[in-house]
Image (cartoon, rainbow, N blue to C red; front, side, top):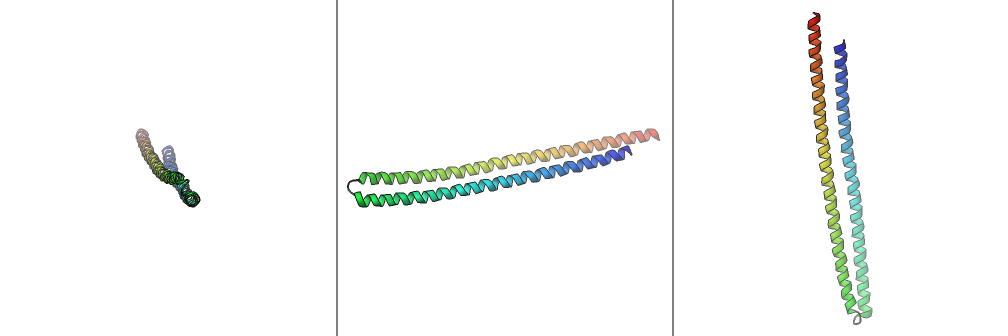
Length: 153
């Protein structure tokens, strides 16, 4: 009876461990998905804002440029050239910022994927070690039971 009870406990423990491993794995996968979706949403929003700002800046610079050229064409020729330089600098800054955000997005995604993979591998290793321990305990109990049974008979 004692052996039977221990075997049942062992099976129950093994099932609980496997259930916990499955739940942890599902949780990690959901966290990974949620984080990826949240990051993608933020990145998309920032990119859209950047594009909107870029368009507004370009339009503003273009309107200002036209007004200055019409009103003060000869007097402020140098200012118009500065405006063109500023527009180019703004466009360059926008392009650099966009490239930076894309790189940050890629880096964060790679880092998160690496961490998730490491955690999953640890989980699999831990599950295998737990299964091995349960199996060894089961074998030891069977051997003990066999010895006791042999002595009694």
